[in-house]
Length: 337
Image (cartoon, rainbow, N blue to C red):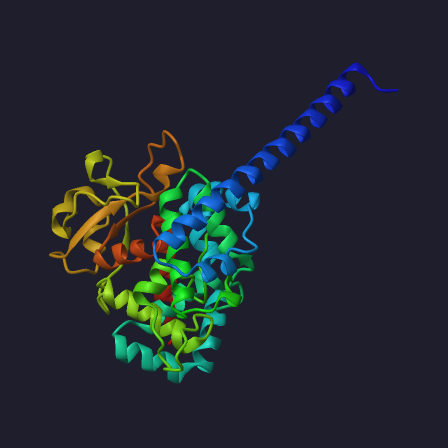
């Protein structure tokens, strides 16, 4: 026998499912209208109509992509958890095996671009677990969905147009466009804009293959070199802060690192200052990465002094915790290679 309470629960579930179904239908219908208008815009920018129609032939709205966009690990994992998950002993060993297998190519890339092999291994390890998780999403549909969505429509619309241009110019092939939910592609998860600006055909076979070791490592190294990464310069140091530090010196957002000073300036605010093995005349800033995910948090731990190279990793991925994880794993490789 169905009780009154059970009846209410069943009614709510049915109503909610109807709402979700209607909402999905509405999104799909509006997406088709958006896609039709986007195709016109793409052709107007000079992209071949044949390429536009061909590449976007099966583009569809992907509700899952919107879910992923709203629930990224950088938004909810504390720093300790985030770094621990991405710098495990297993990941280190997997990277060492890859280096042993591809040593000649990786060493050649390091020497030519003056970018540490340990950094390249760390980035590949965190981005795709050394090519094991390249992503299986249709990145055309992913980019189209995120372009249609209002949160960052302008950014993803530009990325989709660049992707179509790359196919139109035969720089990449349309039949291998599978990657992350955000539209990133290859061993190092390059977005279309990054492919256009920094990817190179290192083995000179007339096609850029970002899922192959030669082109992907060289393209990643080229990107880092071009944005100003300085080999053998520091990335960050973990510090213990005193409570007297003014809040204006504490950065918790990766979007705008403020109040950079020479390391010496921060001496009066750092408990373990005398233990820091660093050139005290270097410019640095202080970050407290957990502040942005723990509302009202008054703790200043963990805290880090970050340097110019750290900010270059932020260009790669605008996440304080991502950059910390990359530099941590890089250091682990340096201790082993």
